[in-house]
Image 1 (tube, chains in turn orange, purple, green):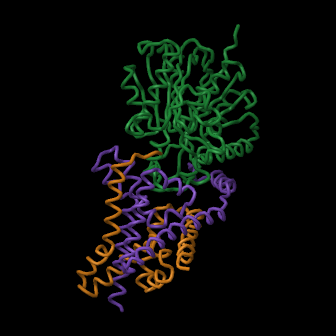
Image 2 (spheres, each protein chain N blue to C red):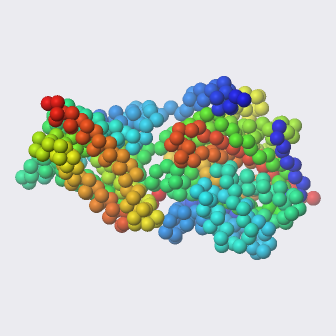
Length: 116
Length: 150
Length: 330
């Protein structure tokens, strides 16, 4: 059941994204930025966590989850360390994902040749 | 003198261009995005469930899931497979975190020929950079409003 | 309406083309002189591969006619990359006086038109004219990195990998008889994924002027071939021609001839290479063999840059027309 919910929810988000790409002049980069902003707004309103609880990877694999993680980091940081925590919390919470992206990206760039 | 690009003739032409635009089969595109995007999430869910079954906490398993997807995406991009998946899946391959990783690996590979520093390393963030910037800005603004007001 | 040049003494002596593997797999694949095995062509960057293709097409041309570099008075060539790096770097290895020309994808007929005037004037005896484009260098420069997962729009054309060169001189099987240089035409279109529609008015303007200046009709040519309007741009040109009831019976587009529909290249081929390779390896032999006697080639170019596109400016376009005639055997 968890698998089905993840598949369906993730699929629906992507389907909506496809409508936006086909019907507007927005590029893929625009779409990713919009989703991240949307994710952090939903997170601040307390709406994103229930989605993750309900749909699992369906909500946490899309890039909007990146906005959610950053926002949760900011909120938790504020509670623990005030304004210092606001500055530190977001990136701290997303550090593993960002680090992995940069490290894997770097080595893939070194190892592989583009095929075109 | 009336510029040609603002002339009534040009406006008429622009309308004609709109009419002649090939209609994309939106339904088919949506279905493919749904299937590809859903499948990537399904892979993520599988990884997550597997890790949790080995006693990992839900939150840590979620982070490892993202890292695994990023690794897979970097590998598939390197092998020249991810852009083929994207040709089929469109937004379905762009929206999951794998699309974010692809947007880092692709320019890194492409611009390696311009050097390791200003080529590979600098260009990695052509698309990922804006995502990180707007992610952090929106998270700070929304998170701060939420924290201060509530 | 701004002059059309009619020439008497300029001939295409020989042609050569070098194309990429995707183009080699298309319907004209067997006709090209060289089909390279992959787009990197043994080099370590796409850019080096493109200039190698252009240089090879020039070398082939010279070999076919048994000429040395001393036999040429000038090279006129261009490509799509910044500072014309493919043409400039290819010319570095030839030591022939060189003039780089830029007309975006119209570069091929621009080179031929200019070269023909130089030969007709008597100042020069023999000129090499060529143009190249390369799928990956163009994608990298104008769009996205090639491994980035993007879905192409249905109206987008596929920049082809290919280089074509011709020798212009005083003898040859095909004569260059008429040249009309294009005006920059801008109908205010902004979609960089739909260049065919932006360029069609330029093709129409040049065609219209060419015919009006000479008092000719489209039927006077066996074939009128635009450069790289693609499927949608081709339809738009027909619409424009319909407006002035010029008829459109013998109209084709080089970009539509390169790929077949199974190749997932959407609206067709684009790039300087489209008109250069299709002329060199398809139209030129047709003229030599007498399957067609008069060809009007109108290569089209979109004269915009990355910066103007990001600043949301419209796309100015241009088209240059050259008429080729078969020299009847007597």
